[in-house]
Image (tube, rainbow, N blue to C red):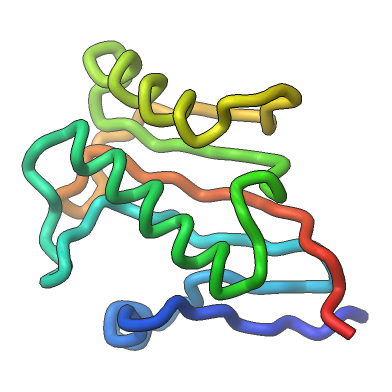
Length: 132
């Protein structure tokens, strides 16, 4: 059985400690990243939706970096949207900047009614090389 290693980006440990979860878990060469939202430094939601989406991707980048991974290592993406029809083009615009080249990761978009005050969340699975 593979060992589970918790991954935490710098500066956000309090959030994970309060809510009792890991930012990501590395098991073998797989990295499972918890949902990332567009929270400002104080943890509150960024009110501008486009900025909130960009900030969620930026927070995701920080978790990936802490694990020695990049967006190129992502194989599966799941996004959660409070108003998918109204938000989709904005999300696609940011997503296209983050994943500009084929092959694109798989992507599942889910409409939800609650994201703790946020309007967008992204979680991913990445494959990263084993650290010797």
